[in-house]
Length: 250
Image 1 (cartoon, rainbow, N blue to C red):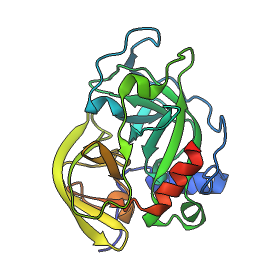
Image 2: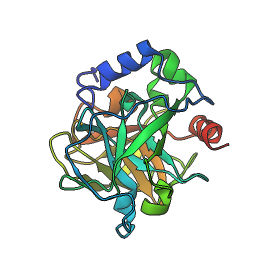
Image 3: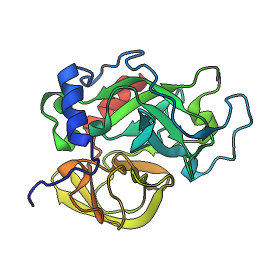
């Protein structure tokens, strides 16, 4: 298939910007406070001191914001510190923040600033679609509680094979609520997964592929997620992402 448009309208430009600026890091490296907070997003948030809304599977999934608009999707992944978010590497850009559980213009858990980023060295070198995943460390000013303690998290699943029944979630650029689909994954290439789920356009990149409480993929990989909103791709989660996760979590 010919490469046409990436899943995120700004994905290609963002990837070039990040690579050119040297903000994407090799495997096993992160940088503290790599990103300053972006412009305040035009959303309603729950104060950090308030009681968190009830946790659910949807609470761990959210939208990535920059310059007041959401542009990609992401999800909380379990870690010892409880501050780790998973998305696609091609979503990485300056000034990001994360709104878990975002819906109808409301950020019920508030906005979480991205303070460090880790991607695989092969993505840094050549934007290898088989390595299109990234871990983001986040924090929320004035909130001593961890993100995971408020939202819950999926566990990272690696080397799980190619055929699964998954729940796919993402945030289209044009809506303030997520789209959700249950679908069956297949192998698209040596290190690529594929799922046919309708209605996943620009903005859904980074959305998690979840089965049995494990996240086994994110929208990305081949054609930065696919050239059709009805078919999505993911890099296969194998030892490469396991090593990157270990480098971040220690």
